[in-house]
Every structure is written in C-alpha cells, then in structure tokens.
Image (cartoon, rainbow, N blue to C red; front, side, top):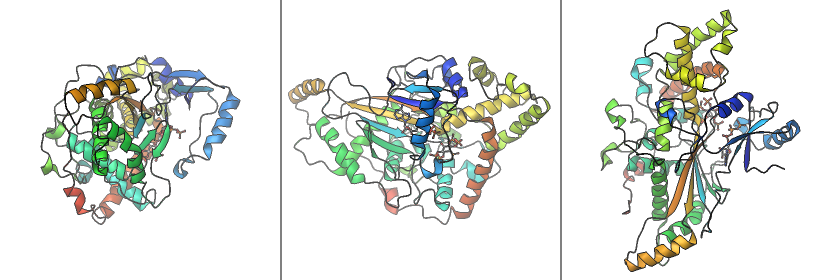
Length: 457
Ligand SMILES: O=P(O)(O)O[C@@H]1[C@@H](OP(=O)(O)O)[C@H](OP(=O)(O)O)[C@H](O)[C@H](OP(=O)(O)O)[C@H]1OP(=O)(O)O
Ligand SMILES: Nc1ncnc2c1ncn2[C@@H]1O[C@H](COP(=O)(O)OP(=O)(O)OP(=O)(O)O)[C@@H](O)[C@H]1O
C-alpha cells in the first residue's frame, strides 16, 4: 500500500519534533540524534520523512501489532489520531549496490546510561559507585522482568577502551535482554525470548556468523574456533562503534580522571587494562549519545525540586505551558532554551524549565538504540582483495565490512514522566541496597576471561 520500508506512527509532538529540526546526513554515521547539547549542533538525523497515513490504516495497524508487544509493553498504545508517521529506511536490511556473498548483518544495541551522577546531587553514596543499569538489573530480576542478571555494564561500553568495550559486548551477547539483537538479511536471528528461562542459543548465532569471518579472513581451510568467530564479530562491532562520522574524529580526554567512568558492579577487572583509555572519538555515535545523556547534570534527585517549581508555576499560570514549550514543539526555540540555560540557578522559572527540558532530552538519549549495519564486501571487492592478499602472501586480514550506525527511538519523553522517574530511582536504589550484596557477583571465570584476542589490522 505504501512505498516505504518502515513506518513508526508518531504523535503530533513527534511530528513537530522531527519536522522542524533541520535534517541532514552524515557519512559513516547515518545517525538520528536530536540536536540538543553542545554536540547537538552537529548530531544529525538520518534520512527520515514524516508521512501522512489514513486513520483507518493506522487503526488497523495498531490492532495488528498490539498482540506482538512484549507483555511488559502491553500498556503502550500507538497514537492512532495524529494521522502522521515517521518513515524510516529498514535499518536491519540496508540496500545493497552490489551483490555480497553473505547478507548484511545488523546489530541493535540499547546501551542505556553511560555515566555516574555527580556526588553533589545524590542522597545515596551508592549511586556514585554503581551505575543505574547495574543496580536496575537487581530490581528487574527481583521483580521477575528477567530471569537472570546481565553482566553488561554501559560504563564499559562507553569507555572508549577497546578491551572494556569488547567485554561489555560479550556480556550483551551472553544475556541480551532488551539491550541486544542481531539481524541477518532483515531477520532477527538472536535476541532474548520474553518469559523464557533459557538463554538464547549462542551456538546458533555463531553458526550464522561463521561464514562472515571464514570468508573475510581467508580462513576457508582453517579450523576456526567459536571463540575466534566471536572475537572477530565483537572486534568489528567495536570498530563500528568507535568509527567517526567523517569529521576529524578528535579524541576526548578520558573521563577516568573525573572518577565517574568506572562502575563498581562491573566485573571487568581494571587491572587487566593493557592500554589506557583514549576516550571516545568526538564524532562517534557513542560520544554523541553520551554527551546528550550528560545533559542530565543534576540527577533526578536534583532535578525534581525544579520540576515541582515548574509544575506549581503552571498551576498558577496554565497558559504558560505554551510559551514554555512544555509539550513542544521541539524546534529551534526549544533547543535555544536548552543551550542558553544559565550555569547557576537564579530562581527563575526559565532556569527550572531549561533544566527540566535538558533532563527530558537526556532521558531520550538514555533510552535510545543504536543500529549498526555491517555490510560484507561485495563479491567483486572480495575477489580483488583475495588476489592482492595472495600476492602479499598474507594469511590474515581483518573481516572486510563497511558499516554505518544509526540511532533509533528518539521519542520525546513527556514532562509528567519525571515523578515516575524519581519513584523508580528510589525503588532501584532501595532494592540494590537490600539485595546487592546477596546476589552472586558472577562466575569467577568472568574476571579471568577478559584477555581478548586482538588481530593485527
Ligand atoms: O526508565 P527505564 O530506564 O527503565 O527505561 C524504560 C525502558 O526500560 P529498560 O530499563 O530499558 O528495560 C523501557 O523499555 P522496555 O519497555 O522495558 O523495553 C521503555 O523504553 C521506557 O520508555 P517509554 O516509557 O516506553 O517511553 C523507558 O522508560 P523511560 O524512563 O526512558 O521513560
Ligand atoms: N527503521 C527501522 N528499521 C528496522 N527496525 C526498526 C526500525 N525502527 C524500529 N525498529 C525495530 O522496532 C523496535 C521498536 O522500535 P521503537 O523503539 O522505535 O518503537 P517504540 O517507541 O518502542 O514503540 P512503542 O512505544 O509503540 O512500543 C526497535 O527496537 C527495532 O528493533
């Protein structure tokens, strides 16, 4: 009916959000991050378009997808009244210009929050030591959302240190939950199954991945261990996440000095770091997400009194909702409010609103997903490279993929989600303090098994 790959019905706020921001593309990172922090002036959208859809079509679509939602998302509903949708390319199945031996792979990562809050604003010391994701794991297991705890830690992924990133991705693979999926030729081949007691089948994943790494590494006749396939796969993913978007790719100072980039619950053994972290390249997809997440400078605890101030102001002056853009539109004026926020609280409602807006944008960045598409070299490129590598008598070369990273799920978070955030934060911390010490920290082998194979490039 529609000549589009993927539609995601948008509320009228989203419509404005996406429509009014300048949209452009960036080579390498066909990203889609709203421009809303210092990095936002150059964090850009991918090719996407707002389209109008017949209301009846959206109504039927909504009914059709409702039963496919995970149980914990059954309370969510599609906005069936705006008549608008975002039209996106199908990122799990990128268009190919030339045939390849194997279909493209696409890896979806929901990285979550990559930093610890500043001690200035939090009431519980533990929040400055253990990251929100790791604490939340205990709460999720205690409440039955997941059967097993994941040992993934976002601070490792966002570290910019290859060893730590490798370690983080390995744990995403081991326990993907809703943070990790793999697609091959547009089909999901690896994800956590809702409500299942069993871990996803890693052997099946390796079976799918093997041809990519056999072929790409000229290992046709070699015996390749599962571990080597997994290492190669993770290494390619780390490269894609660290790749720059075509800019100068400057490297930022490691945040280690700030003491906010290591989580005490991570089972990565710091002493094993062989090369110091160089930080994330400034135009990598992870850097952009992290910068936007860090617009949350006050933590929910420091933010909540400002939220209350705004709420009280709106009770007295309901018409101010529009001027203060509480429900959007998320346009240039909105971005200006974020960027021009005074450094210190001057007691004005403008300051409080700007901090609330910053926090909401940070929440979006803490909840977005990255889609990394890996396209194997075309058959022609492979043949040329095979000839040249035979001439050079090389028996190894890194897997040849081209990659792009896009950012998904940039829905604006509503103003009234803030009280829920505070309640959840309290529940997570309370649960962690109650159960944190009781849950096993993970098998000992985890600590020891972080020596990784890095192949020459
Ligand atoms: O609060 P969190 O960190 O649990 O994040 C929620 C996500 O849970 P997660 O921890 O990633 O499993 C949650 O993900 P799931 O539904 O659990 O897959 C949603 O993304 C939710 O956003 P929204 O309310 O649907 O706009 C997310 O809520 P927001 O807080 O981003 O609004
Ligand atoms: N452009 C795309 N290409 C391929 N897959 C996509 C694309 N957009 C979304 N998806 C897939 O759909 C999933 C859900 O998308 P998204 O997170 O944007 O919806 P949502 O906001 O959670 O929807 P709802 O709030 O209605 O439940 C993503 O995790 C991803 O697997």
